[in-house]
Amino acid sequence: MSLYDVQKFIYQMNRDPPLRTRYGADPEAVLADYSLTDEERHAIREPDIGLLYVMGVNGQLLMHYAAFRGYEWTQYIEAMKAGERQYGPVRTGLYTRAEGRT
Image (cartoon, rainbow, N blue to C red; front, side):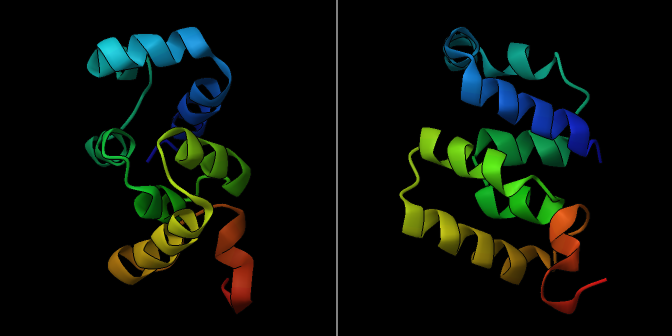
């Protein structure tokens, strides 16, 4: 998994309107600029906010990306909960330590 590249993509999408325009026109060309696994590409394309959360994407980045992709706040929170139900606990990053996880 290349969490750094996933987060870099999301950070840039959150802050770069021309990149969002390019992505809208040709998502695969934009994603090719990042070292991503098939699972990461899928999570970004869908978007699967729950899977991105379980992958360990920073919540500040993910919150803005989810809003950009049309998620209301309650939908965003539920997507993270659903992600843990479907994919298991957070795999890496800060949130692996939440609620007594190690």
